Length: 276
Image 1 (cartoon, rainbow, N blue to C red):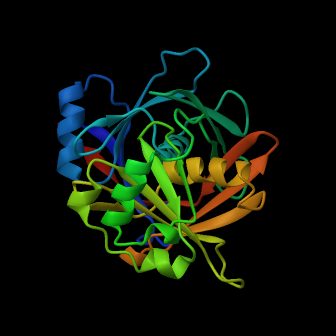
Image 2 (image 1 turned 45 degrees about the vertical axis):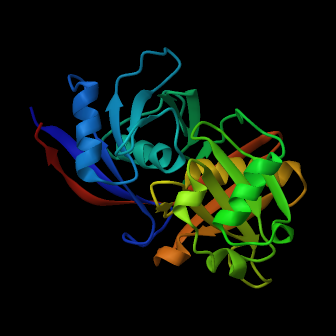
């Protein structure tokens, strides 16, 4: 049976400048094997499937698949799925705040401002990187250990770890050794010079598979929790990501009390049906 299908662009107002996401609406009746197969077929970083919620506190449920696995949470699929759900007529029970059910539980998505933004989920793992992990990263990035000025586990589901370098220019110059990086999922962040529209440049490397993600909501969420908590960032900043891939991703981060909110623009690009 045909299912409504939307492909959106997340974290950029340029329809081809952010991170694409495929969204299948009314996905009831699709098996997990069909969902996984479609995600492999689209070959995007993520494909999501909108379902009725099973949690009474949620407005909708989303399942998130990469071409190789299902994820409990991811950031650009959260914003893109909420945008697609709203555009298809979804109405939050609480005006201005949609509640998404996914593998990590309930995620709040604000939809009453200039852009959608989600509340960063709690970190599952934090703390300094172990010496052997740090040495592995330095080798994979061909960096002297002294160039890594800060480091942290920032795992909010996908398994992220992160390092901070001295500058955005250094971040943009990296050419990782993918085999040496395996099996880490690594975020690298460095400050931009004053006057740039973004405070930091971010890159996301998936070791082993040789994949760099264009713009990554989950990573930026956990980076912000780390940077805010350590006093390394102001209470509101913009992160640039995707520059090395000729994208124009911009992620808007802000601290509101004890919470971190992650925002980005979303643009619908393709509407149609998928036949499975």
